[in-house]
Every structure is written in structure tokens, then in C-alpha cells.
Length: 290
Image (tube, rainbow, N blue to C red; front, side):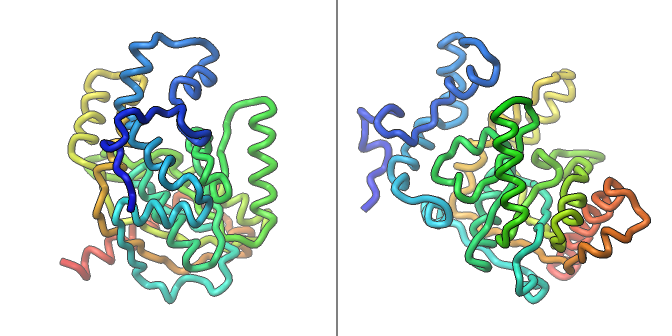
């Protein structure tokens, strides 16, 4: 039987080696020490105590087993729409919109692993600090130095291998643009990777959205012309709000790497074309589920 966090009044993040220490992560990023009151506030906002409790109870698992534990912990159910479009051979790059900023990655990673028996998913280097998921996560690091070189090597090895690779080409979760919840324009990297490593591309669309509170903060940021996006700090809260959710993933027709190689469009144009295909899947789904 799982023991909830409230029954561990003396529990602290120092009790196990897998724990997340947001202060250490942020101080390593900015290269200097931060005021303790600020760190304590950030720890509460990102649910550090709750996250470490999950790591405490499931930390003996890793990779796909840890993902299965998270699906059970958050009582999530899932379904594919048009699963017949999923290639028999999963050596593809699966690209998807990014509506949730956390739970969509966990869910898709689990679903692809269940389907193909293996999976690697591209995530921000911050998420790579979740050690039990390092066997399936691929850190995307835009910085310089040894850490970036290590991330590039991991990416190359994964692309050369046979496991399916998932990606959110927008690079950040969806926001309200032009009155609609949608991704930013997709980055072109996955198109070049598909051609270079001879992997077909499978467009997906994840049906979901965050709370109204999350988007209200986004509107406030824009109204105040803030450079920093406070919504990023709210993503862990959105993850814990997702308990008991049912998620649907729409599958598009695979796109051969040869057609991308021979296309008259630039990689950036191809990326936007495939992004549009993802959103067309949603339009078709909405028409049939009214």
C-alpha cells in the first residue's frame, strides 16, 4: 500500500538520492547563489515536496516502469484515434503539439513505449534531472560546453538506433495565440533529423488543455509586457491538477523521409506544413465528435 506524503511529516528531499533540489538546479543554471526566501517560494510553487514524495515511492523503478508508475499514480487513461496509422516499425520520429507542458510528454512516452516496447523522448534539459526517466528522455540543451556535447552525443546515438523518438517541435507548451490555444511555429530540427537518419515522420495531435488559471497568467504576462514567463513555474501545478484525466492522441498518416528529402520546401516550411497537419487532425476529430 502506498503511503501518502501527509503520513511522512518528517519527510524531506534529503532522504533519498533521486530527490529534486530546485535550488541547486537553478543556482547551477544562473551561476550564483539565490536568496533562500525566493528558493523556498519556488519550492512550493513547483510542488518540490510532492514531486520528491513520488520519487520516494517509485524511485526503485526507471524508464518505462517508472512511466507506468506515474500513470497509475495519477490515475490516467489513454486512447489512440486511428491507431491503424501507426507504423508497424516504430523507427520513426513522432511529432506532436504540446498543450500541457508536462503530462502530455509523460503520457505520450508511455503510450509509445507500450506500443513499440521502447521509446526515447526529447525534453528540456531541466526535465532530464528526473533520474528515473533518463533511460527514455533525451535532453535538448542549447548551451555550450561539456554538458551540451554530452546531450548531442546522446541524441545522435538515439537517432542512429531503432527506438521510436518523440518530439514536441514547438519547444514550449501551447498558449493562446490569435484567440486560439496553439503551439508556436515548430522548429525545423526534426525534419533534418528525419532525412539524415532515414526516419519517417508521424504527425500526432494530443487533445488536452491546462486550467483557466494557467492561461490567465499568460494574458497577465502579455498585458504587463513581462519578458519572463511565470507560466513555466506553474506547469508542475498543472501536472498535479491532471489526476484522473483521460487523454486522446490522434494519429496522422506517416510521412516518408524520402519525400522530405525530395521536397521543394525548405525544412522550416516542411515543419510548418506538418504542424498544420497535426491541427487538421484536431479539426477532423472535433467535426466527428460534436
